[in-house]
Length: 164
Image (spheres, one colour):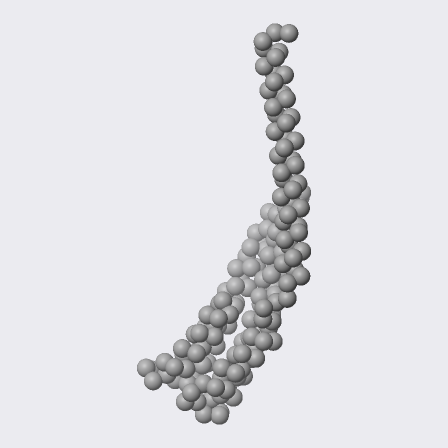
């Protein structure tokens, strides 16, 4: 056997061994990811939508310096915005899911991909518009100025707690 044939044989064996080990590592990593995914899915939610809405309602009831009418109007704004925001987020999640499924499919669907990206961006803009509209409504209810800082701070801290 010539030196060249020996080198080709050695190289072939190295490549086969590398492919086998890579496949085994990849398979083990995939099993680990699946196991972790199952564990995460089995975990109870730390705080569901109802708890968040309830916490928001409590924030308005306990806000200092507000009349009962202001509290009522703020609670109405909060409930409406929270519900609409949850619906938009659900729709965004579904659109993202479809986008990712489309991206990994074997079909070439550039129009679908572009359309889904546009839809997600549009939904996100709708969510931001909803937030800005709610802020305008809150300003109409409580006003503006340095004396309103404790009220706005409560809104801000509630929003930060939710991760928004």
